[in-house]
Length: 359
Length: 127
Image (cartoon, rainbow over all chains, first blue to last red):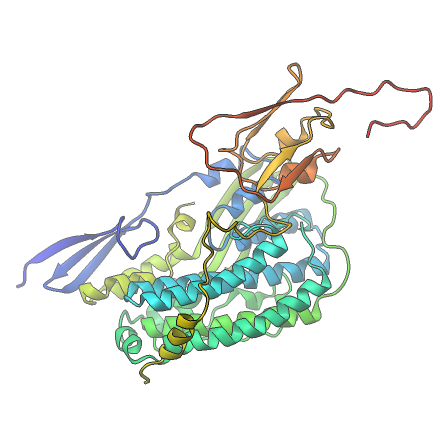
């Protein structure tokens, strides 16, 4: 029998943007088991809910994650609005959808860049981030923040986008789409990338389902599961096609994200075409009394905000379940039986967002 | 399966201008909506304390007796909450980011607003 050794991977590792620790049990070069441990950047957001008024907690909820911040704020607001039975104006719902999809574009481009970096393609990394910069510029022009938008509030949105700006955004997206086609072409067709990603970290459909994979990780394994299909915000009024791939390897997950870039662009264009005129917010009075599970689709998968209020300005309980947390068991499954050299690529293929996970 | 997929992009980027800005030499990009830092017009502040209550990071402290308004720039998350809720609109958001600092500390502003003496006319409210 071969001797087993344990190699620590992380919390500080060149491919990891954020700290997660994995103990890899190896036999020669083969990973037999991976034991994850988290808890390096816990910040106690769920406790903070008792100290901040529910209207201000939007800002805190947004800061759960530095990448998909808008969708965190949106989900929290949706939860409170459901408890308080607030009717959000139509235009606000469309604006929320537009910003959500811009968040998805920027998150997927960030991931594509980091992923390219993980398999050593520096040039591609910088090209992905150059396109991402254009998305961030639009975010800043419309909301005032590049990464933390702060434009969602209970009862609507803080900022309106004027019609001319929407038309310009739609035009901009055409040229971004061209650049993206060129970029994704490299990811999906280049020989060396295919060689690096094909049949690496395979997750079967059954495993994806039973381990509770969400988002592109699940869709890459053929599980057609997308919270946007539930029709929150304005998604119910838009034509959305769920992107799925069946191979379940790193290449399939990469393909799902590449194709989702184009569905996001399509969704933004549809939303810009269909956006109605009207107010962007309603006045909210009173305090939430009740509980609600708000669910939405983040770039990484399904996000759940559980909110419980008791009729005062301070909420009693908030629980945030982020997609990366549910994607860790599938990751452990993927790592079993892979080569040590493939570990960085596989870990990045689930798009880990650890500050989300630990809240 | 294809080779040299990147060649076209790579060649074009060689001929293009850099995508980045030479930052300290050239000013950073900013838009009219950019949230840089909060500034106060001390001559209009009525010391109501709404900004202090609405601040999610508790960066603002208003002392009514001393007539001072202070902000801790290191605590401030530049969320625009105080600017949105200020009843007299004496707080504004400046698009310029604050310069790097070498030491922690708070910025203290003395409020110079003087409540106008009420005239006999009804409906006179301080601006």
